[in-house]
Length: 117
Length: 185
Image (cartoon, rainbow over all chains, first blue to last red):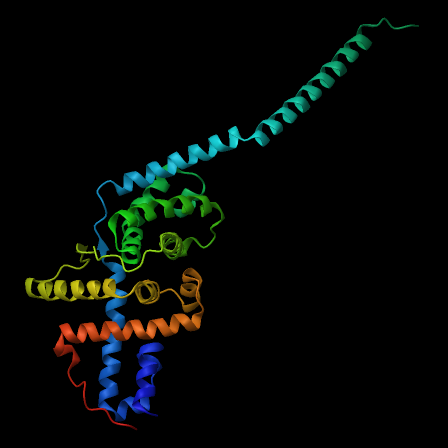
């Protein structure tokens, strides 16, 4: 295997993917592999290093989320579909209530009627 | 905490934000390079996170999921603005491990240089390195976020890593020792 090929593998697929046999016999590629491993470790280490965010960012996130929830609730309430649904729901509820009142009144009338012998 | 936040517990949500917003902001800053843009993108990412939280099932993978949301927000915004190669504004990074004075000085120099080198990469290379190498996303995930194939991710990654290598060799020549005696095997 040529050094160029090994070097390509080292920097594309990572040093662990390079031919161990070649690395044993080639000092330059071994060094290149070490540098790639060092760089990989350093880049991974960057994940644990944090930038200093603006002082109020945390507060702004919490506020943005609550504001967004309120806005969404307002959007839902102000949408015509919501009111159409509400009107249908109210009409259905009124219908059910009317029917229930009718049934109760009918039962009372039946109960109040004197029995015929 | 994630489960409690999913069930609508506001205290758990605030705790979730407190524990993750610095990492989310740092990723946004690394991708966008500008503190104001990064702060804006972080807020937008949290809005999307709260919208998707109820359906989120892999509770243990919350940081990875959040990072994907942040990356998507940043890349969408950058594509929208067609901004390329924004100026480097990452200066203050906190070291998580306490070191002695000499190690600290060397460490600060190294990390500062590495951070600068990453920021100096052209955006097409920087985003791949940040997502793939720094945040450990797979080639497929990186390609999905950037809207490119896994093959293109590999090509960009190869070029980006070699550019970083050249930068670091230039600034830390001792790191480059044994660079010149190539041989074919």
